Amino acid sequence: MNIEKQVCDFEYAKRLDELGVKQDSYFSYVKLNDNKISIWQSDKLNNRICYAFTASELFDILPHRITLIEDEPFNTFRLQINKSFVCEDMHNKLKYTYIINYYCDSTAYTGESAWLGRALFNHSIWDESLANASAKVLIHIIENGYIKNE
Image 1 (tube, rainbow, N blue to C red):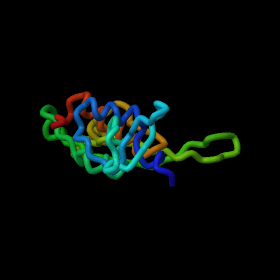
Image 2: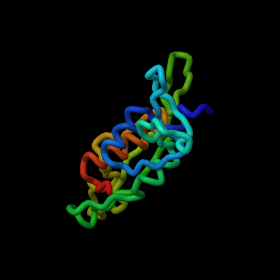
Image 3: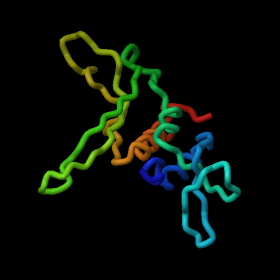
């Protein structure tokens, strides 16, 4: 597998840098002499633009749960990642996608299922790349104040 499929896209990496995510990754995006952006091993660089996080590195950064101030006791959400597929064409060629959201880990036993399956995000975040899906989630939770980036 080539490195481009293992790291998040440049636009997400740059946004994570702008949001103040600690820049520490094995790979970095660099600008070459012809102004093209490329991915290189981080410890060999002087011309780094930002780090190119792998899916594994992003999982280390993503919180395993998010607890909100309101709606106690139904205010704790746990990370859930699903690998799913869609048919890419009429010949039933499958295209895989990663779907990420945080789901409430408490349920109400009132006979109503209002809390059952309650998700933190109105729409799950997805991408064909696990690194991109993870980066999108991290950007979303920082931008929406679910976690503070320090």
